[in-house]
Image 1 (spheres, rainbow, N blue to C red):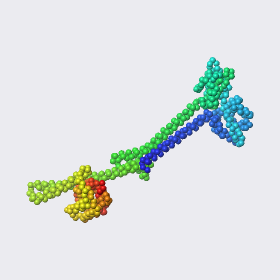
Image 2: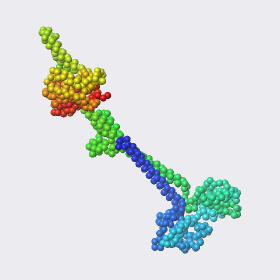
Image 3: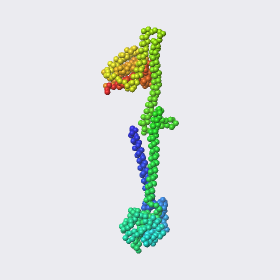
Image 4: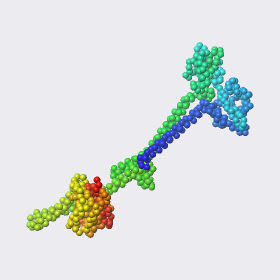
Length: 587
């Protein structure tokens, strides 16, 4: 997997992971809110949701009815009581039962209480449960404050001179259920009210009274009516929906609902912020550490410190590596970049070594060339002083001999200066060639014959093997001959006498040919092979005195490149040397 795909996969996986965490968090918060709202609903309206659960929790052990202790505690907390009666109406179990609740109900008596046909000081809720093949009725009772209000209203509330007057006892009972009252005339017009905080109409009709009584949840309040036959007026008692439960406490149900959602949202927001903070720290550690390490690595390279920064461990391992030498997990996403930096570091180390070696070689070359220049210059100066001296009259033959030596020394110095000029011109591409299509078989053979006639190399055995096919290539004959002469001279000067030099021209493919110069001499080591075509380098694997500028091989390589070719060396100590020049005829 390449680095692009790997990063895409990593980021998609991490975003999915974060999305999953947020989804779980939101679902968890929503579930918690629902549970809290259910508990709040149970707190304000314990009967509807809890009575079936309470009934299901009834068990019978040794003819004794038992309840769930937790539910019993909630019944007591809500201010209610429990009673279990059998089919005959006899109480078989009770919990928190008031004294004014009968122990036994006559047939039809319980129905009268339950249907409110007969006054009963408590609100009744019933549920039938079967145990061991017998049916039992579970009664849940709560204080019926509304019934008391309706019963006492006409005695404790009066209407006179356009105002409603309420005595203190009724006020306390009304405030206990957070209620209010209104008075309607026979036509439904509101004559007045006490404690009204709801948005109520100024006129009621029969249908609206019935709807408000039948569907209180639509209006947010419960409505109870008391008719006064003496005046044909109608009193209305308004209470919150849960006011029939005696344990109604101060506060607004909806406000608590909002508070639950608000605090749950706050908690969720805080958790999300903490989650993103932890993820940011994790991202910074996982992705920031490798980036900072690579930046530090580049900074070290810019200062010439060609190695990867070390970690703080005692063994001094790189920060990106574990003890086994493998990349640490958080660095593996950046494998390509780490490998590139390692390769760059290795290359810079090698270049630094080569640079130092070349500096040393250049200094040695300068010293050698200075010596080589100084020697012929000393000869010229010496013979010039001799010829200038008045102490001796030189013959014409002696003068000509002096002049010949001075000319040879000057020619040698001129050759060295020309080599220096040529190598710098080639390096800077400031050289013009006279390129002409040339028959390479004929040209190489003529060059080898002319080189063989040089007095210095007449004793060197050399053999030329021409190509079977005709090869024509565009060259500058003067400088291409310089290439061959330099390479042949190098093979002759740096090998013992009798070393065989073989020159061959081979056509590799239809568009490529190779010129090889091969000897069976002493060969060269790896260090010499690497520096063979560097400027200033002069081979030292011969007992003869170093001669020349040390630029011959560098000039040859540059001339080959200028002729659109490439040059390669194969050699090792004791196996001879083969130099191959490869040229493409196509294009």
